[in-house]
Amino acid sequence: MESVFDIIAEPNRRAILSLLVSSEQSVGEIERQLDMSQPTVSKHLRVLRDAGFVESTVDAQRRLYRLTPAPLQELDAWLAPFRRFWSAHLDALERHLDRIDPPARTTKKKRGKKR
Image 1 (cartoon, one colour):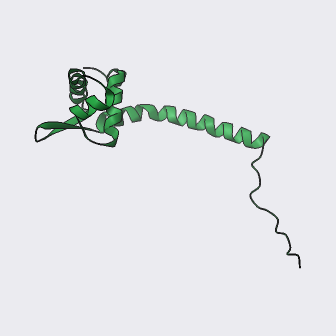
Image 2 (cartoon, rainbow, N blue to C red; image 1 turned 90 degrees about the horizontal axis):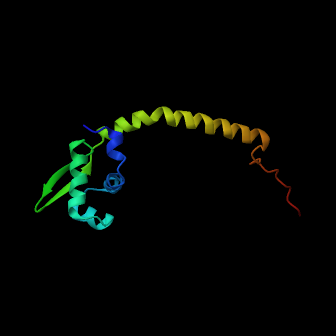
Image 3 (tube, rainbow, N blue to C red; image 1 turned 90 degrees about the vertical axis):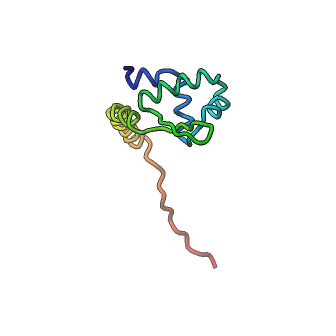
């Protein structure tokens, strides 16, 4: 069985996942939006379905695909330490920049009215 990373390493699969983020899509809709052939879309959807990334339902004559969260949660958990790493470094950079060029003051002195 392929790992989550093997599956998302393929650019066409990532493109399909990106489409499915916003809404359910049929094979035909995916074909048109990504300019792929039906066999190519079906092949990638089968891999994504077998790995648990997508699930499908039948709606009359067409099959609709949608994302399932479990494999993406696994990926998110793996990425969490890297986010913390970058967040800490970006926070340190921000503090450094504030020390060398403090932010502009937001309060202004009020001027008296002229009569």
